[in-house]
Image (cartoon, one colour):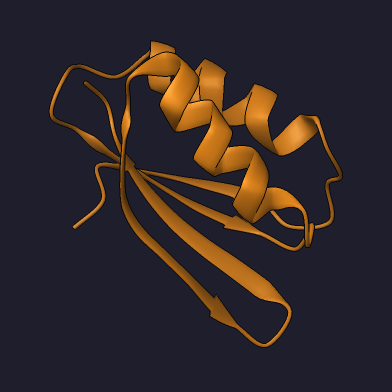
Length: 74
């Protein structure tokens, strides 16, 4: 279950990443950020973001044109 939710639907790169970065900054290690996005490139963007920041992608899924991610702050 997510500790915080970010609605990034309708936003294009780099805004979903920037908003996620800001949200994660306010969270503590072990907490989960859930993100909903509609940018088709967000899957690759969030994968790279996690690799660069050391945070963990817990879940990545797609439902129609909405992409759903859960990132654990490390």
